[in-house]
Length: 363
Ligand code: SF4
Image (tube, rainbow, N blue to C red; front, side):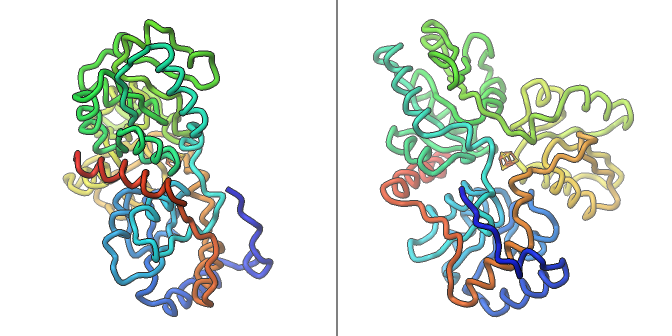
């Protein structure tokens, strides 16, 4: 997505002045405005959020807001799209910086997925396949899944959705995150070699063989999260050496070996709840984005909480929501000018909503 440079007056804003202008614009907008902040946002942004959470929780909270007419989503583009899909058409969703995309979502484009879908069916005539997309995907991909009678999933409900899909079809085409799909399928008892095959959109027939496509229960799109692929088994071993008794908890966007070497894996909400409910004095090594880890650490001074990756690993696209962009978006809204509206056009909006609602029904 293209983001034009900010007007010079915003480019030069210092931290304190940006904070004052955000505070004032927010007060001017009153209850018409709700600010949504994803867990991976920096502290200078999250302090303004009316709601904090993962992407689906924030979209559902937005959908339940009857009074607000505008939402400013401090997250990435696919999250703002989901909020737009789940809110009423007259409610406005704004993303402060349009360049805040998601590298994982960008790894599966609609044209690629449609071509793969046709190839799979050409190679395995009469194949019974249902598509499942992680919510970390573009709205037009969710719409594709809605049209094909599949479902969305999140990192916390992926297992229920895969079980639902495999009760109705012989195989599932899962995108865009290979790791979430593999981790969940392995936890369900499926064999990585026998029951799963990888689809690499850059290779003929996705790098699969007709035999592997016929046999596979899960066809995994070759996508990944650039943040979570940094975590390794070596980091877990080092944490265990240096902190005997440490609890290791990672996000299921990490690779299978990392998830299997950890004590627990789950969504950002799951990670937060586990650490918050733990006993004082406990030690936690976490495999997810650094801003969430640091906030947990700061809010729980009687526990030791640290990131598995010793080199700071922020999500660079989340980080592109800077207070200057938030000030610019809010001041424009306060003046009656809508900037950076994220609006999913029809029929994608209705079809994507089907895929999201199906997920909510299943879970
Ligand atoms: S952490 Fe990974 S999946 Fe989440 S927004 Fe960033 S790149 Fe995308």
